[in-house]
Length: 131
Image (cartoon, rainbow, N blue to C red; front, top):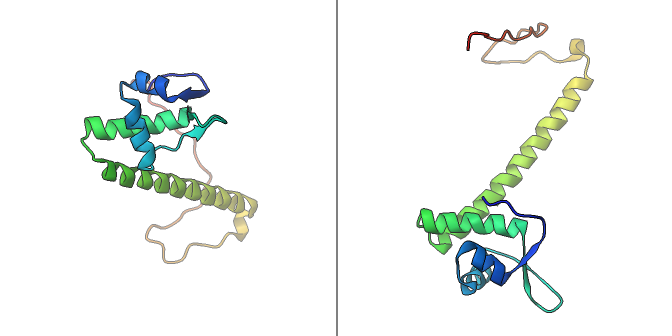
């Protein structure tokens, strides 16, 4: 991924930067793969996030030979996986808060666990100094 400053970019500069024709960017937009914003004069404006998405599209098509229908499926799956990851992180965070709020004596013992749970004070890890 290339380093760039925060901002918006016009179609001509994006096309030049990535070595593609502006019509290719328009095609990606028609196919729903990119969604650039528009200026008051209806000029396409690409954000850093659009460029990151474009880099994924180009990697899939150029390096992996994925067609546009496949790219659409992969991008949709990536979005869904990202949303699921955020939900899991929120859930774990809430569990940690609730678990920390309970006194240890009032925590219920696990029932039918495959691995016995032993409650003991955690011991500090010893580091191997010979590495």
